[in-house]
Image (cartoon, rainbow, N blue to C red):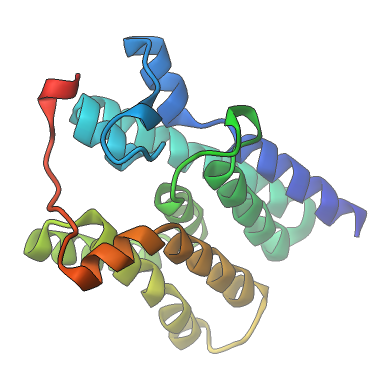
Length: 200
């Protein structure tokens, strides 16, 4: 039980290192949460400060998810892997170092999945890309993609295990973080993605 506590604490602290906030502060001396959607994630960085910084933010988020998850695997196998990823996601969304106001978690979830099962990652990434190309809404692409993980994992693994249970909790957290987007999607008010260079 103690090892799971160590994984959870380490995962949360790693996840709390928010790349969007740190990179924008370092380069532009601004708070990314004060512009665009107000979200401290790679999508808002891309929208507000351009694709290169957005891509760097995405890469950093994926790598921190990998670090937390792989540390968990080293200590406690697949259950530890998923637990590290879950608490990294929690730290990313509610970061200790930044007044508990962070991102929405998609990049962290993607990073965790990439290093767990790259084939399943590619399938879900392809669905994300297709939905985005059709609707140009990152939120809708994200919601559809994360909701695919539980059934796709079960169809390929054919078992109910810690990966499915903890992975489903992660998916639910990502959808929860998009609750305002869901309301706007239902109302037909969710804006299409675009890069606003005036705010840079």
